[in-house]
Amino acid sequence: MQLNPRIGIIGGSGLYSMPGFTGQHEVRVDTPFGEPSDDYVVGELEGKGVAFLARHGRGHRISPSELNFRANIYGFKKLGVEWILSLSAVGSLKEEHAPRDFVIPDQFVDRTRGRASTFFGEGLVAHVSFADPVCSHVAKLLYDACVESGVNAKLGGTYLCMEGPAFSTKAESNLYRSWGMDVIGMTNLQEAKLAREAEICYATVAMVTDYDCWHADHAAVTVADIIQNLNANAANAAQVVRGAVRSLRLEAARTCDCSHALAHALITDPQAVPEATRRKLELLVGKYLAR
Image 1 (cartoon, helix red, strand yellow):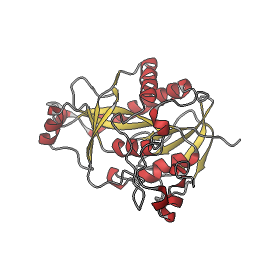
Image 2 (cartoon, rainbow, N blue to C red):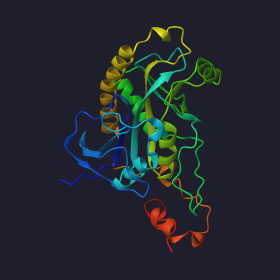
Image 3 (cartoon, rainbow, N blue to C red):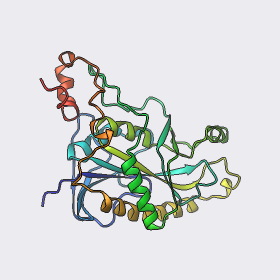
Image 4 (cartoon, one colour):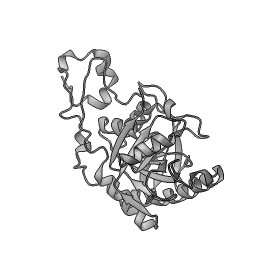
């Protein structure tokens, strides 16, 4: 049976596959932006078509700075995905977010350097609205699924996206705390921006593995402790994702702004768009650049 995977799942550190898939098969997707992190695993979860992608590749081969975010998100778009549930391991910048807690952030602060985070350029300029960088509907579904699964979770908060791959200095960690940041990670900001440009609803589950280096007890945390928390988080994440997928109503038309984010974002005169760029971005902007 040919599935239409309208739901995408991005698995982060410790989550390289999704338990519970049926009828799964691998799909290699070619994109104008190069190769995604891995093949997409397409199958059925809770009776719905889903595509899963291991963000860092199976075996965790790709560092945050090396990720081809554009190819990953474009690949989901090409498969027909309309909703993305993202999962990522993070450090906590607040005492209240303990290891094994989940945070569903609604804001981001970018501390990365020079990463490609837009599909546009090469003669076509677009400025999407990004004041509210995640889909509130998907975020609420994920939070409700956390509650249903018995996972301690917070709806809302700010995710600081750092470059990495080294972790923060204590001075940086304390600076971010003084800014009121909730969690720190290395991957989700670019995904959120590109998903918005692709008119895909996006939200992330930030899974706390440890306190960042600001914490007095941080030195007592071992790699074994972190791996143990990663494994526990992965098991909880699988339950949360299943609950969110189960609750997502595919028959209802999307009414959020994500679904038409480009409608008022393209500023270039359509007649001035180079033909090569038009062809490259046809999947994203074809309906807006119709001659």
